[in-house]
Length: 306
Image 1 (tube, rainbow, N blue to C red):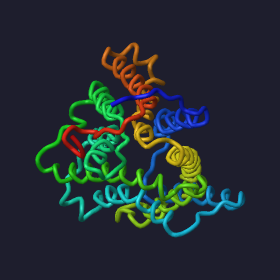
Image 2: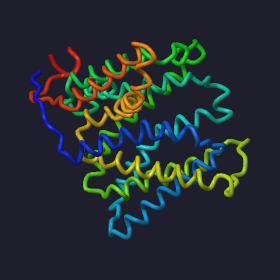
Image 3: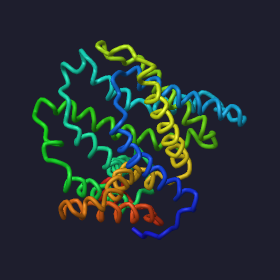
């Protein structure tokens, strides 16, 4: 397989770095002082962010044309809906939750899921093997630093693991056809519609024991979270509509890399594992962004070709 090195346009590169910073360090820092108590607060923030983006888009004269883009936005939200539904009773009584590291590693392995879909001919063939390797290397770098008990599971947790794997692969598949169905659709309207949809779903999925939201105490948290969600998903949809899918699957790894690299001064006084993971992850993202297939070949030997 022949690879060629390409340079990303400056605007896309800036958006990529901006998203990594927003989804990584900024979100990490905000989690230190934003404490969500109920699904109502999350729903309010998402609907506020989505409504604001839809209003701004309408003022600009943007609109989503046809039913297909809305169905695509619903498909993008489906994995999120399934995983949140699995956490509700009585469903959760039959599905034992896995540690946080499992979902984290599944998200980092998005390039690997794209390679799998390409190998079984469920996605485009032009997936560089190097991109798939970058996904494996990125997950391996994370394994150097996250605690072992964060991804260790027992037999009773296997059904939930399979559900999370299906949701991870389904999310990557949704990204693929979203790049076709959302072509030429305005970014603000796509991001606004998606966030509003998530907000409505969050409101429907309120836990039975959720407390009533206190707007006087939580109003500023809702506004802060809405601003963060709006900025993050505008960049996310901008990249979805303009970046090649193999490079787009690197976004979860890029966000974690940004979080790790921004903490590098502190990590230098921690352990060699933290420093090594930061360097490996940063190098993997840079290499993965520049990999591109020239002559199409099957992603996995023996699948879809000789």
